Length: 324
Image (tube, rainbow, N blue to C red; front, side):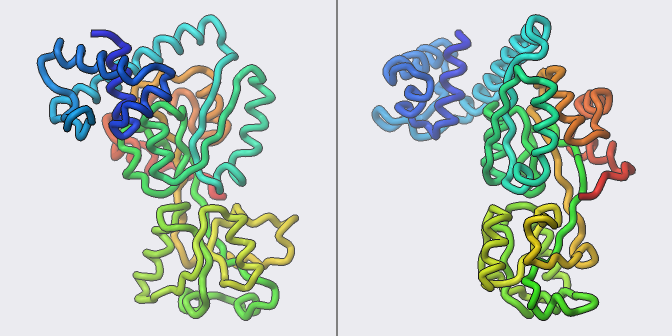
């Protein structure tokens, strides 16, 4: 059994059982991967993949367990390499972050600027996507950190730590009737077409829940993943916006009015996560603390020792998280 063989079966799964795409991503040949997978299966005496002719069709029950263990082994191998680099090149390396547009555009710039000033020899790469894409990137090891708010059930394979709460605002043009009200209620909001985030993005489920609890059916006419796109369509008069307050810039959005909606929607919580068993290098601990100052190295290490997400949530239950 070779590490290369374990890497091949993991990557075949990551590429939806497409051996050709796997070979291309690994800069090797399709026959070479097929041969190594067969050799591993012969050695183990079980099939990892089911087949129809030359095509892989599914992962067998035994294959699922084998691939899960292979992922853990490969993760440990990367951790061993990281330990070595920590001792030989402590301030050099790379950091891959997977997150949404709102976090990348509004929550992370100052953090990243300070981090890059401190670690000029660490190359930092940002990957923006949906919650499922973010969790997938982190689970596959393509991202070191996942930063997300929505669909946290997708992150069961990660250690997810709470960073901060954030609230929403109702965003309208200056001449909109809502801008003239002394207090805006959900019923007022529900009277107008709404422009907001795509479902599964940036706390959208909390918005839908708030309307449902009041028996209201909001007229959501346009959705997007990008807060700046949402603001563009608010300006066009397509509808009123419901979006993260941190995405409103008082300097550049002077033509818009942001109405505080914290009394209408419960706050959402942004979390940062990484794969269980990951060796965190010094600069990775530093990045976490820059993004969430309460997540010191000692706190993170204590959270890592806990068994599951519920225990981690309980650890931070009494903590007064910052609000953005």
